[in-house]
Length: 171
Image (cartoon, rainbow, N blue to C red):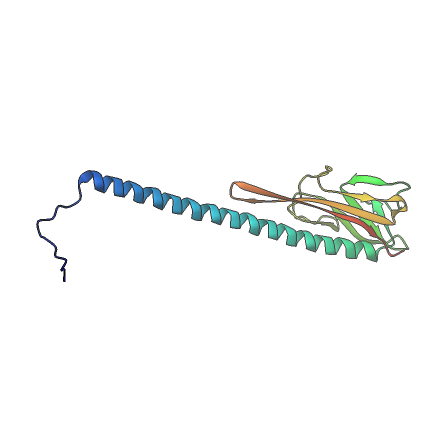
């Protein structure tokens, strides 16, 4: 049987060996830190995108339900349906048979509700530009909405776009 014995006279590690081992340890620790922070950043972006999709779904449901409950849609706050297709609108009004206002929707960068207008979200891109806009089809029977949304997380901005296409009124 062989016994392993330690001698008290064994040599320790040299200074160069300690430096090399320390350097390798720092590199490995840095790689682990970078990987963890990179994975965390990806998770934040995924969460942000999920929040935008969820917000878009709520806006879609509200928009579709409101348009379907109306008789016709107008450009802006007009009281009559347009005679031809109207595109790139920043505001639309949904009306009933007697021309009473069912709801008014607008595109804005803030969450204010002014004069009874429901702004779709506080995260829409573009104020009165084609980025987020409505389209009203001839005679106001059908409306469409294009959402271009964003959310800022730290230094990153996530964009999300969706078209809510051709929602018919109940007429």
